[in-house]
Image (cartoon, rainbow, N blue to C red; front, side, top):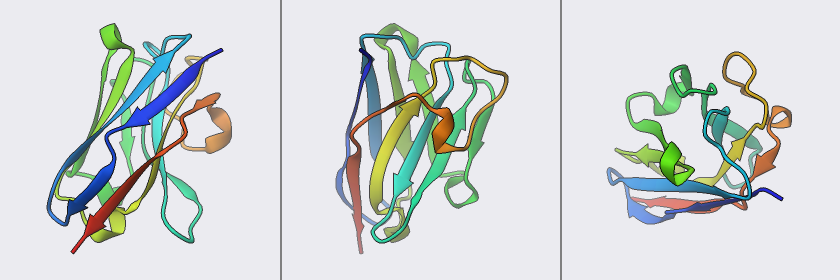
Amino acid sequence: QVHVVESGGGLVQAGGSLRLSCAASGGTISNYPVAWFRQAPGKGRSVVTASNWNGRNIYYVDSVKGRFTVSRDNAKNTVYLQMNSLKIDDTAVYYCAFRDRRGIGYYLTESTYDYWGQGTQVTVSS
């Protein structure tokens, strides 16, 4: 059974930074598509960034381009989301998801992912 755990969330002032981690156990996220989604209060869950299987083809939603960077450490079976210049609108629960089929590109819809973490809260204050 694959278990995915996010960590690194917290309370930060606007303009600050956080790094989220997504670690998998019971399986490998190396060489598989990975995505970060978020759900703001009162809103649905939406994709923040999605990577193809080797991490060379990456999508970022427009609102985070230039501020967020996704990376992976295959040796640690962990994916990271570096979030800089945080804004109040970035406040949300952030979820990591990965797909256990390589496919071709990156995937933007929730239903294409097989394993999800429990989420980590990011709160940005003014």
